[in-house]
Length: 615
Image 1 (cartoon, rainbow, N blue to C red):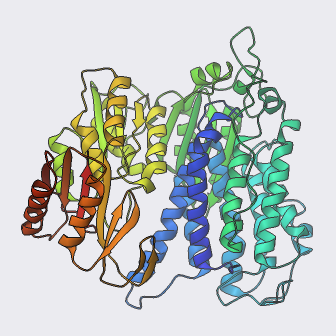
Image 2: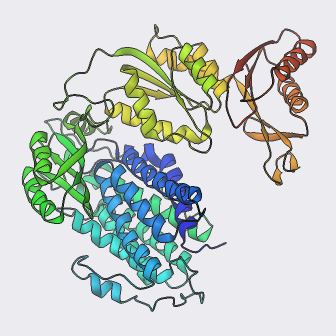
Image 3: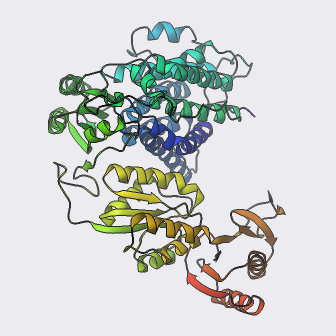
């Protein structure tokens, strides 16, 4: 069923876009050959949208916790989304995406607050003519015959928002290049402007226009044609627009073509070892600058104008986005110190990141996009190196970072030598929290245990960031805390990294898991209809049993799981679960299943009364 473009739709959009980027992240990384083949565009876009989604969630949570227990408006949410993307933007494409979201927020927030189209305010040459073609009176019905609900945007509002986004993105890039995410953004706006119908139809048309433009990017940019790929940033934008179309229409849009490069047309390697992926943003023949510099900047508009000129003279791939005193600055330079000094002269730079990717760009010419070299995180961030990117204190050899849902499990993991990241109900950790945990280990090699299917994309993004900082990282796709416990039990730092990862993965995969939960409302499940207060026995993620009493339901779950065999039962008790329940379950296993051992842990998890593992 189609939805209106309101605060809930924006929240849904962020969630769908983040999930889609999580699935496509590795593929987008693999086709990243422009402006530098550093293999991180998918990861950067994921982290940017993740920051936007967290800001949107915070807006909803903040209103819910207020004295009036109100709900945020469309203006509140789109502004939060744009601000979250701005402060969390990563890389060239992530910074441009942040500006695209800001452009959309400018129109949607103004329209939602005042009911009038926003002023052109210098969006770029031709902006007034293009946007004016689709101006409509405030509150007018869309082409589908429906007037927008209060606090929602109509089809015309979305058309103008997409046009504003494309115009602002072009202004943010010092030297725009066709065949990139900018071209795709313009095509999305043009597709929306040609579309008739309601807001969902406009969103679908924008997606289709962007998808068509993406397929044409190899014909516009030689480096893409030589590598046999479409533009990575453009692919990411199409993925984000697909989330918007799905949020508004209720239907998944037509799938994108696979993003992986064609093996039959590898990028040629020049005699100096440089491939086409090493070309800088402005086509310089020398292989491009050695450093990527990114920072947030508090400065006024006049100072930023001067900063743009100075940074443009220092390097290329210059993108400056933001406004109202807060900016995100991205540039590729050979003199990283000069780029930071320019920011100091303009205002107050912070969250400064300097990444050396010269070596990675050279290696990418062989047809295998690599990760950038180690990043120096300057002292206002956790895990900081010195400003020159010098070595830290001696690193440990290998560490394990585990996400766990309770204090007891966190203590258990700590006893086993792992660094635990405790989750809170309804607040899964962001990739940045996992990256901070990796930095705290000071290890050369790190194994991540997400212990939740929903956190696999988050852990993958954290691992990618860790690799960019010079850490060898692997994610074991554990789906439950008991699988993480099994993996930790066979962890052996003395063997090779690959052997350790294989052993831990095998142990986790050999552990079936179950969880008991209490239903909050009536609902359909795989086992039938449950009522509020029923005990749900979920095996391997699906509801398998519905009971009225926790211990009896747990016994039935154990019997069903052990029917196919098992040697070890692990019981992880939730907060407040009586010890008598554990004793009853131990006795049940001992009396009913020969030669099966049971181990009990006080997990302290607040949401699941009991987690069960069968090895």
